[in-house]
Length: 159
Image (cartoon, rainbow, N blue to C red):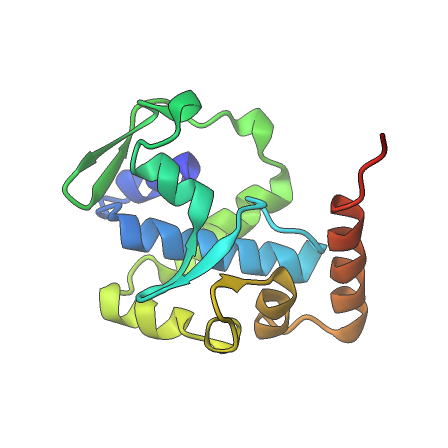
């Protein structure tokens, strides 16, 4: 989220919360389809104006104790109070984040809402599965099987 806000600010584009959340969704979708896993690992929820990464939304609203103060808000506009740690992002993640900003940052609220009301959004009840997001993004059958295996592996714990 900090990386996206920084790119938008560098380009003189308002980093409103709706735009930032949608850019994260599109970056996650691209990375999921191309590399088999999302950038954020966040849970996307089906809200009125499209998919919202739930944990990131809490951070943007300054509701997570461990992340308090890293982002500030002025109305709907987000500002980063710290620089993103680029060591936490791989080259492929940076590529997809930048592609998302390049492709979608000029879209307005209504356009972003319409674009994000896609197959994954429309076929979900509350949380939007990565499988549906991958399908929406055009993942082939092999990639969908890989993603499904990754998700299964992520849910397995050993005592």
